[in-house]
Amino acid sequence: MTLNAQVAAVVAKGFTERQARFLVLVMRHAGVCVMRQYATFADIVFGDKTRAFFAKLERLGYASSFDTSKGRGRLFHVHGRELYEAIGKPHSRFRRPPPVAHAVERCMLLDVVLAHPDVVWLENANEKVVHLTTLAGIPLDDLPHSMVGIGARRQPQHFPDRLPVGIHPEGRVVLVYLPVSRNRDHVADFVQRHTAMLARLPAWTISLAEPHHPSDTVGGWVDTVREHLAAPLRPSDRTELRWYFERLKDGHRTKLTASDKGRLERCVAAFEGARFRALYRAWVEDGDRVLDVASEPAIAKALASGAGVVDRVTLSHGFRHLSFLVTSQQVARSRTRGAKLGDEVGQWLQPRSRCSHERQDVAAVDERPAVGSETRDDVTRSCPAEAR
Image (cartoon, rainbow, N blue to C red; front, side, top):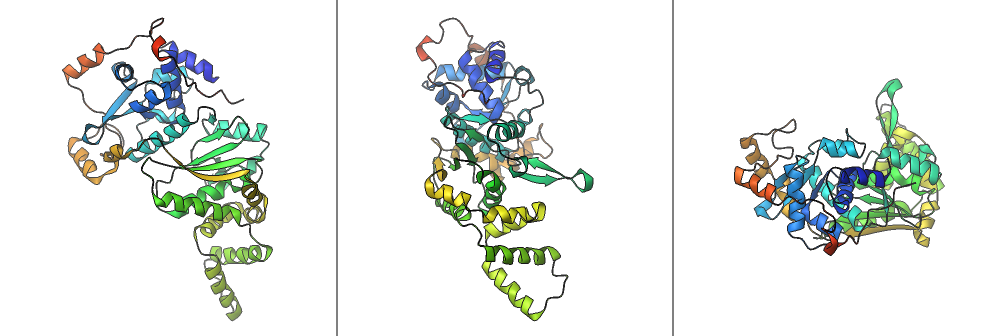
């Protein structure tokens, strides 16, 4: 189903084209959003039209809202089955209520998507695999993956990070990473999973996104990623690293000679750090081909020439007002109220309740699409073209 067909199907549900394009983006990439994001997408001043749009979504049962800290805004979860059926995705994972921390992360990733309307954002693992194997010519084995299952059922799961992958009009592939943890192993694993693919791409960018309130942590990670990619293994290092990994996998069950003990100590000192821990985890799954890729100079050459870029992207707005979602105080408070969604009380988004006068207010501000009703705020931003 093409992007334009999805938009037309949502318009048929009683929305304007502008509203439909925004909803399609939300349903394809996040499932959650805030009102400010719609105003930014439509390039209109935040006001009655924006409030009326979200009030309509709630009134029709297509979305639920959640109060933020100190009444500074609301988070909306778009979950209506009719809308997802309209775009051909009735079983989308975004219909399920997300864990509260994931809801904030998805809002941040949606900001990245909205900020780059010229980029075609691939929606899911299937779409990413088809595009990169057929149009970019990347072998399936070189796409980022992790192994799932055991025994005969063990198979690769492609793009396990579930993060946006974009295609710039000039052909550059854009990877987005959201550093939500201070654990450097997480970003090292992300980079390691993508190295085989990066080595075959003519141009690529890794963007580390951060909220409007920047931190030195992300800046340090940019340097870490560059160092990870810019230093291919030397032949001597590759030999030693393979020997070291075999010892680690053996679990020290084999008795070492005195010379091997000294060799092991040198390896421990030389191969410490997040990069080599990520390499080891990848080597356990994929074997020596991981070391072959790590030894290739293609990625380092791309970085040196500018064909490969690692940068930090500061989002246009902050998300501190959503911090209520992940504080232990609010979790404890939600436990006393009870939960209707999710397995554990307090771990999932809980819809805000509306009293009768609020429901009347919602009905009063319904926005009906009519001919010429939005001529004052013509759309100046359009959704990216469908990936071909």
